[in-house]
Length: 422
Ligand SMILES: Cc1ncc(COP(=O)(O)O)c(C=O)c1O
Figure 1 (cartoon, rainbow, N blue to C red):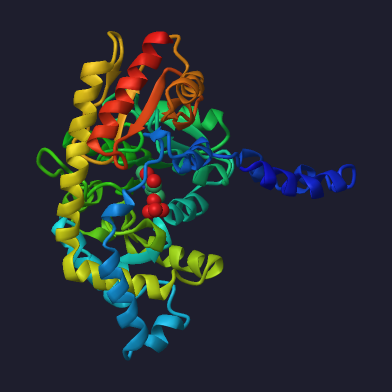
Figure 2 (cartoon, protein in one colour):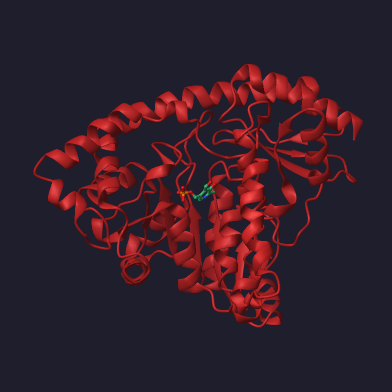
């Protein structure tokens, strides 16, 4: 904020002092758990030119297929489609895009029809709707420790409790059930990002995916599969999504309990806000009713543009961005090995955008960030916010998606200096 802006915005506040309503007293109880996200605050730092930022987990804008979008938008607005492009539309989503997704899901081992797919405004909207659909106050959501902060934010509005999903741990279904009862509700969903999770970058082995499905079956709960990064694999063989494994066990999508949330944000463009849910029809039917109530439908023009760009070259676009991100991931892993002192460990992601760093006990990621910004102008996300129980103070998340290899080397070298000093 510039000084001038500060002056302009503080003036009316001064005038209102003493006359404001007690807004928190009016807000519903669910609003108490809506807190500003550390990540959103940090995104502001990306604008400062001298900061090397590993903070925002966002795609590199230089890689957006802007020309392809420009042509697709022009064509949607000039051809026979221009009326439809600007008109209200159905809540399920633009049919040609849903048909394209049926083929895409088939390539992942998910046999479904367009009736199993609803388009959402980004996969974030799907997480909100699923929280609304499944979680009554006091119910339990099983999540990773750590997990995607945006999932916690989406679910928090529905006032659940959380318990730790440990796919390879030996906790029994009965143990989960009793813990949920003690919190005043039932276990309702397990949320998992199987490929290149945010924030750890880790991928669940097929056995871990099977274990989640076993546990979900024993508990008779839904599985929310967050596949936001699934297309961004740099190493190793693809592992079937949870939904594909669920179909293989149960003979068809209508018999499954897994709800797959996909997104075009990490592959094509996040600003258009287009994602999708793929699940059994009873779930889609309810989600469509929710969408009608919430925003009627996602922007038709955006769905049309995504459909055209995806149909004309989704695989080529993904191959292009993967080559860039893979080189950046390699640069970050090499720089960490060169510059981090003994006692610091990190993940080695096979894809996605993140490396998760664990510092020795006693370190505090938030304090380290303050120091790092002050002395070395390097930004990252302190890990604590990703833990539903507030633990993980000695962890940090680094994103390699937006920095050049040279910036990664320089930034990690500087970060190494901060950690040594800490
Ligand atoms: C794991 C995960 N899920 C979902 C989202 C939401 O993405 P979008 O709403 O743009 O699809 C993100 C965004 O960063 C994410 O990291």
